[in-house]
Image (spheres, rainbow, N blue to C red):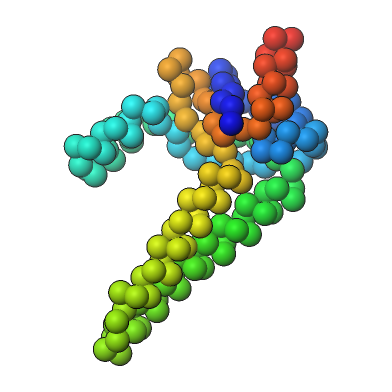
Length: 159
């Protein structure tokens, strides 16, 4: 999977090529993605504890609001699998509490929670993309399709 650098601070949909970020197929569909991005090195501060990681991440991160070309059916697949993963995760928690309250072995039900968490991670890795801060302070899209990365490079050369 490729990485694409967006050097502008407020990227618009017109800056990105009209190629799906995950499938590499030309598309007119656009998805708005909002969040906060931190540099890679901020993740290493988790070794010093949760509070240190939260502090460093909040100071080094930057908000983003992107319009990213993403085929509607690919986005729907990602959202559907995410919903199913979260439902599996939370049903495991609820069943563990209920079974534990009834005197049974609630720990066995937590396997459902672990399964839901694993499905959530795999789905986000396979069907979505990441956003992080690059070394130059620009945003980088990670886990993108090679065709999207090539189209973004060609687009950057023309402008």
